[in-house]
Amino acid sequence: MVEIFDFISLIMADILKALHFIVPNYGWSIVLLTLLIKLVLFPTAISQTRSLEVSKVLQPKLKELHEKYRDHPEELNRRMLELYREYKVNPLSGCLTLLIQIPILFALFALLRSPEKFGLVAKPGGPPFNGETFLGLSLMAKGNPKNIIGSLGNLILAVLAAMTTYLQQKMTTPSAASTDSTTDSMVSMQAAFLYFMPIFFGFITFTMEAAIGIYWVAQSVIGILQQIVITRFFVRPIKPEPEAAAKPKRRKQ
Image 1 (tube, rainbow, N blue to C red):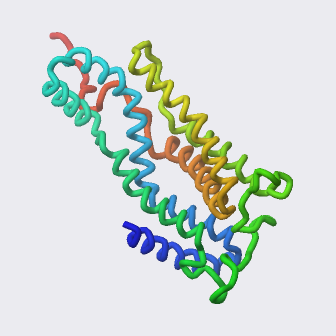
Image 2 (cartoon, rainbow, N blue to C red; image 1 turned 180 degrees about the vertical axis):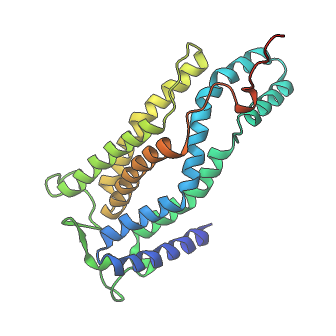
Image 3 (tube, rainbow, N blue to C red; image 1 turned 90 degrees about the vertical axis):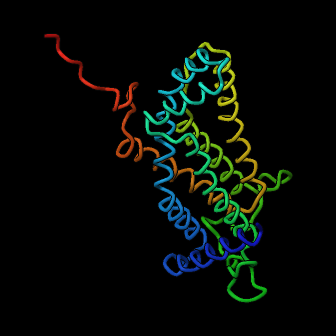
């Protein structure tokens, strides 16, 4: 597994070097690499957004099926599959998207944490990322909780990471209005993650190399813009009834 991540990291390092010829600053090269990754994964983002939209419509229907067939699990599974087919949605699409993204994320983190391991140095034994800075912040700088003033650049990056993570999650988290206890517990968990994840990634951004923070802020900002584009041009609002079921009624003779 480690060899696979290293292989992906080496490919990303080569792409990063090529981008560095276009924009001779590794900070901006990381932003361009993030944009390139988002463009490659754009079809999966469209699929994920459509699944989220469909889930808003399916949620009350699935609740009805659970109540009606709670004592007949086989029939429940059959009815649920029929419902998914009617709305042309794959319940495993979210898992498939994660399976694609996780190796890329792990490989990119490994690259940005140890750039010298993958050849991102001007000469053997030289400083990682050639010692370059991004908007005055060293790409390998880490925040120090005991020296906030000296870590001001990392602190600003951490705040930006937390804010953009929150906005991105807010846009992609489905809302549900229901008095059902199970649904209420799910909504409570979603609300907890909505606030926990930005704090977590803000902390990670502050304590790890600035290059990782630059990537995370870039991917969050691009993700927000991407979500706006997808919801406006690629994913239409899902109707309560599937297209196949929306047939015109016959007139009475």
